[in-house]
Image (cartoon, rainbow, N blue to C red):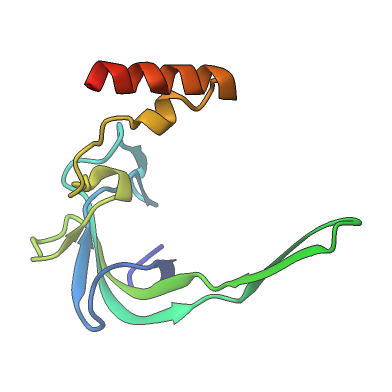
Length: 142
């Protein structure tokens, strides 16, 4: 890619018209200097881009069925993309909004981890053994 190119990337949480900075550059090529590879990323390299619009891709139809069972399912999906125009490639000045790879962003879950319920503890048992262990649990709680 070079300055002025328009790219379609996976949907970004940025408003239309805003500039963004991609600072995790894996590879940089110039005719004069050749190829530079990062381990994993290149230090001091960045790509600045302007968000043009948000678009949807072509519709993908997923159809599944099971023969002789009268079971059919038809689903459709349209992937959302963000169109960006490359403004500057190389050593870029600081911009307020920096986009990172999805794996680098840690999401915090609001739900605390729950303890396993008695139902899941008895799941692998036969009905007779399940009844016996449930009765033992009731006696222990009493």
